[in-house]
Amino acid sequence: MVFRPARFQPSFGRVLTVVVSAVAIAALGGFLLTGDVDGLLRYGALPLLLIAVVWALFWAPELRVEEHAVTVRNVLRTHFVPWNAIQRIDTRFSLTLYTADGKIDVWAAPAPSRYTVPSMTEHDARRVAESARAAGGSIRPGDSLTSASGAAAHVIRLHWELLRDEGALDAAPPHPVRVQWHYGTAALLAVLTAAAISGLLL
Image (cartoon, rainbow, N blue to C red; front, side):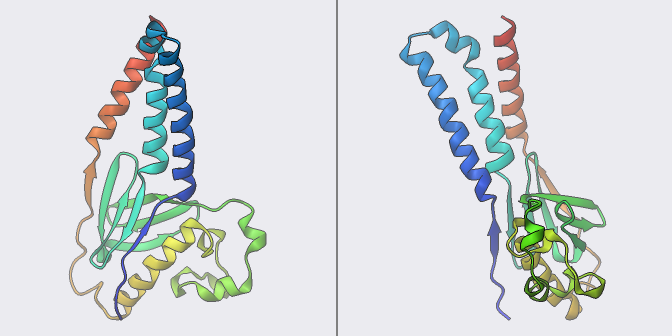
């Protein structure tokens, strides 16, 4: 079976980032158009902070499902998760990967809204991966293939189940999850927060 890499990013989050950024840039442009240099210096950091926060929360998160590992980029950290490190895949609140090193919440695959439950059908339960089904064949709303968490979980489960059935997950001791901190993002948010607070207090 040929493995096809998959990439997931929250589409609504990207739309929200564009809209919020446009409003924030318009606010900065207002200071420039009116020649309000003092206002720009005092309050200009606020729109920039808003853009940075929305980008970090809603644009940057990403999930990449690749042949040798699952990469989870969240707000301040990126987790590189080898397949044999995954112990369980859950979608109760959002897509969550459970490993020996702890659980990893996937920001790029949020839980569905409460309106997903009435739209689920018996066909949905038949289409999902075997490990997604509870006793009696039922599935959680977060496992619905029409939801962000369910679509991403389905891709991961299919390959994870294939490796499990082939014995590949037990062929070697679990590899550790590697974590990369986003120091640049943290520094940017800290500097803009400090600048915004300073402008408000001056």
